[in-house]
Length: 123
Image 1 (cartoon, rainbow, N blue to C red):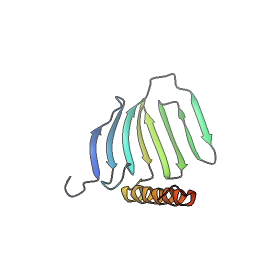
Image 2 (image 1 turned 180 degrees about the vertical axis):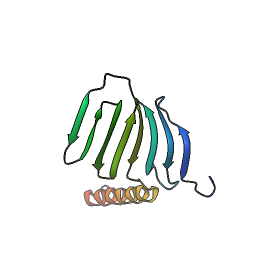
Image 3 (image 1 turned 90 degrees about the horizontal axis):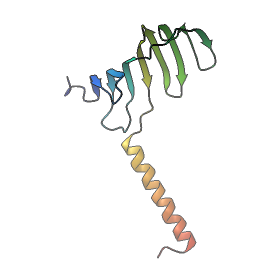
Image 4 (image 1 turned 30 degrees about the vertical axis):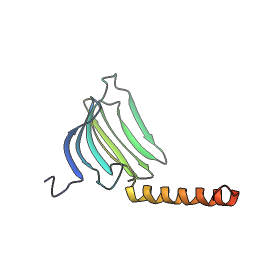
């Protein structure tokens, strides 16, 4: 499976003791992951009822005892469903491609060279 889909990771630990990745997508050509589906343990607290709706998203529940929420970012929808202080969480992140980083660096060096040439410090 790993050779067929090298960017797909299934059932991986994270650096957080409370979060475990069920599935994630991380292209070898990107510095960042694209999406993650994870399960995480929340703090056990007294459940407080809430309901929220605004321009970014919506949610309702009893703290993290039983709740659901979703909100929109520049990269897409993020959502979380909590039951008994355990949450299933899905989020997306904008990829940062290596080729984009390379071309950004080339453009930066060209701009620096042009500025030095204009200042007369480039020989």
